[in-house]
Length: 375
Image (cartoon, one colour):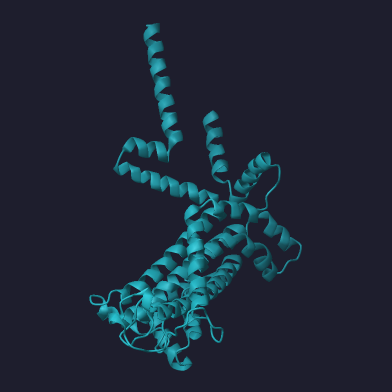
């Protein structure tokens, strides 16, 4: 009988959701600080405790401010006195030298490379954020509709999603990017819109899975019984409860868009000259890698800084919205200790199991001693 009770308790223990974890955390903080915290405040506290995410946020903010304030935006001038299009005499072979006013050097036409890298960073950031917004919006809507209505609606939308997934993303983006550049005369917004239209599939699947589970909850049934229309249920009840998945996936979509735009511009299907982007700078200066490596390294380092920062921010947001994820990640990291010591790995990954095994061994030893004494 006790075994059956234990088996019945296991599903209940495993079914603890994020809301219950938030309530427990709020209760602990209320005991410590004497005040209650909202869900948003709890998420912000968890995000701030993620050191890598906080540092990455600062790095990304610095990169954005540096890119948009240095050379300015449109008719708004910046504090850097050189243009990314102005040519001039190549000083000292174009070697980076802050004393002559070129901290990142010059290209073969005498253009200031700092201004060019900042312009490329601007273009890449704009494309990445527009792609992130468009792909997030489309993926969330399609996933929510498919998960809520199910049936033939779900089948049609998911088959359409599968069709987009089957086509290689780089090839599809290259073709659409080439078409957008032909009809828009090289503008970056049409390119960003096109890339957003082909990168929403992963979020659609994630949101669909979340909505399939949420639509069975009591609050959804209550809203439907009170006469709420499907649009209100989706936008007022379902999507707000998937905000964690949506926000985290949006950050990863921005990071992926940076790399996708870089690949397209490198292959000649993205941003076109006389404008520039980080991928285009790498493509134009790949032959100078051995003679003037700074022309290759500066845009590469900017790409690396942006993508790593956005990925770390995504990790921090994931742990903040779902506290269970941080424990899983720590367990995976601890499991790597198995390469160096099996005892340390076991104690890090499953301390409760190790303790239970020790206790069982001690109990068996005591029973054996009892049997020996009885004999």
